[in-house]
Structure formats: structure tokens, C-alpha cells
Length: 366
Image 1 (cartoon, rainbow, N blue to C red):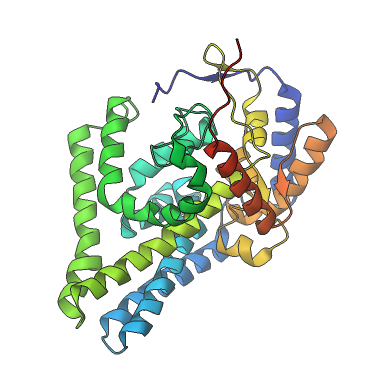
Image 2 (image 1 turned 60 degrees about the vertical axis):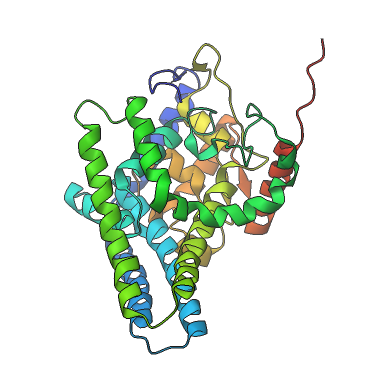
């Protein structure tokens, strides 16, 4: 990871496009007298997904069901947890849930409720991913590991040629990694790279992270383990099932917006991206299934990832309307706007991208 000040954008380029797009979005809200925040509908969604998750939790604790029904309820909890993350945690930690900062912080803490850490998420997602989208060594969402290769610059291993198969298993382990070792390793890395800032002490943040994990394991592991009349391995399967469904849904939703064939992976030259930040977001991000209202509702508008990246401080409830403005403006200025018409088309593109990146790089000709 390089320092947060290393990569710059040439915002003098395509300035008229960026100015026009921002002005049209502002005009949309002022003309229609609409708030940029989530409103009552988003509050209802937050209540619904939280109630679904807690209902599953207490149904399991009731000990009134056989092991197979409890397993199904665990899957339901995982689906609900993903809904919490996408439907309102995401908006809240972007400051888009409410104009009240305290309300945003409160609802943003739902990620702690699910076992992760809001500070880590804000640095990785808000700062690194949203600023340096699809830039290798800056955007941790596309950071490669020995088991997978998401960028051309990453080291290639022979087993990567199978990553389009096994990654669909590994995606389900994402949130399980968060609740165990990943958050601790990431916090240490952020401290080393200077992303915690001058006002945050590593020791204090490590203590907060540890306490958050203890509270999570207290209600999700200790209490159920003491209450439930099942074997330890049955409990472990149920616990992993919750996280597998959550992680799989979250991973697929974000991968279909960035790790697909239509998106770019720019390489800075002399620490400079020679295009406007707004154009960069359009080049590195894709929408999918814009007409699927049920999917849009469930994933918190994250299938409108382009609109989210352009205007992250606006609630997702407005993204379908904003997409029309983005389409009009990109057409006028000749700027590319990446869209996949449905989820299967985006998924196919993602698989082909994994296959392409899994192949051994061609040798450079002299």
C-alpha cells in the first residue's frame, strides 16, 4: 500500500462534463424539493431487515425447531445480514442515511452488530475504494492475494487458471475473515500506512476493535452455545452458514460492479491519473440490472454502482432517478457509461474476467 497522497487526478480535464453533471443533479433535488437523504422509506427498510435478522436469531435460541429448520433459519439470517449491510449500513457510513450526523453514526454501527468494524470499513471503502477505484495497490477491493489474482500486475500462480471456479466458494468466506483475523491485520496496516490520521491512536482503536469483537462473539457464539441443545459441530455449521450467505451476497454484488470486462484498471503515470475523477469513476464502475426493482431494493441500490460512486453522499433511494441524468450527460459529452442489462450478463462478464486474469501473462517481447 502506498501513501494516501501518492495518486492525483487531473480534474482540469473534462471539467465541463463534471460541472454539468453535478449541477444537473443539484437541480434535480432543488426543482423537485427532495432531500438527498434516505427518508422514511429507508428507516422502514432498516427496521425490516433488523427485525428479520433478530427474528431468526431468537427463533434459533428458542430451541423449538429441528436441526434442519435451524439451518434454514441460519441461512435466512445470513440473507438478512447482507440486507442490513447493503440497505442501510452502507448509506449510514457514507453519511447518506440522514442529515443528522449522530443518526448516521448510530445506524453505521450496525456493521459492528454484524461482527466487523466501522472504522476499518470507512477507510477501506470510503477513502481507498471510492477515491482510487480499481487502481492497483490503492483500492483494497481489488487487492490480489496468493489464492487469487484480480489485476494484471499481481503475481501469477499456475492454480489461478482455476480461480473462476474456486472463487465462488471463497467469496462466501469474506465476512468470516472480517470477524476473525482480517480486521486486526487491516487496522495494523492502516496504522502503518498513515490512514488512521493524527487524532486516532492505534492502541485505542485496537482496544475498541477488540471490545467490538468480544461483544459480537458474546451474543453470536457464547449465548447460543450455552442455550442451544445441539452438538458443537452443528452450531459451527450454522454459524458458518450465516456468514457464508452474507459474504457471498456482498462479494458478488460488489464484484459485478468493478471486476468485469467493461471496467478499466488505470495505472498511474508519475502518480497521476490523467483524467477527471468523475470520468475515472465512470470508467472503473458498472451498473447492472437497472430495471430489476426487487434487486435494487434488496441490494440498497448497489446495482446502480456508477451513481453511487459519483455521488456517494446521496442515498441509494435516488439512484434510479439519477441514472437518467447520468445517461443524458454522458451521451452529450461522449463519456462512457458502463451498464449490463441484467445480473446474468454481468455475472458472465465477471467469470470471463476471472478466466482472463487467471491465465499466465504473455512474455514481453524484446
